[in-house]
Length: 178
Image 1: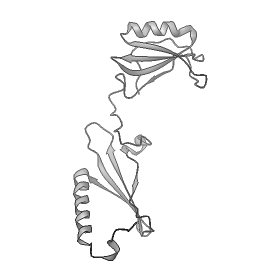
Image 2: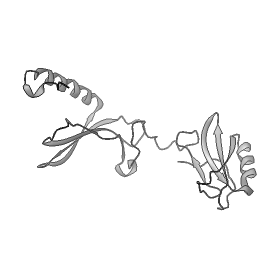
Image 3: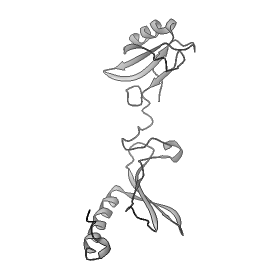
Image 4: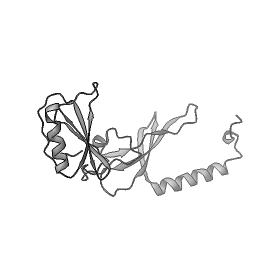
C-alpha cells in the first residue's frame, strides 16, 4: 500500500466521514475525517485533480481522522511491489517469499500410503513466471516439495494420462460405476 500524494488534515479524533477518492474513474483510496476536517480534505482532494465522494461512516466502523487506505488495485497504489496474482491465497506471501495458491489435495477418497497436494507458486518479484509445487508427505521420508515449471507440469499431466491409458487392463484402474 502507498499513501496519497495529498496532505490531508488529521487530528486523530474519531472519524465521522469516509471520503472515496477517485482518479479517472478508478476508486483509489478512502480517507477518513472528523466533521471539522471533512471540508478541508474535500478541497485538498479537488485541488490535487482527483474526484471525491463523501459517505457517512457506518457506526460499526472505527477509524481516526486522517487515516487513509489506498486500494492495491487503484492507480495510487505502490507499483514497486508486484501485485498478488489472481490465484494467490494472499496469506503469508512476505514470510514465504512467494505467492501460493490454495493447496489442492491429490486424493482418491481412500487411505493412501502418501499424502500429496499441488499448488501454484511464484517468487515475489516482477516478471517471474509461476511454477507448480507438488508436496509429498511420507511417514518414512517426511515432507518433500518438488517444484516444476508450468511446461513440465503440463507434460507431466500428459504422461500421467498416457500411463493411465496403458494400465486400463488392470482391475484397480477401472472407473467407479456410480
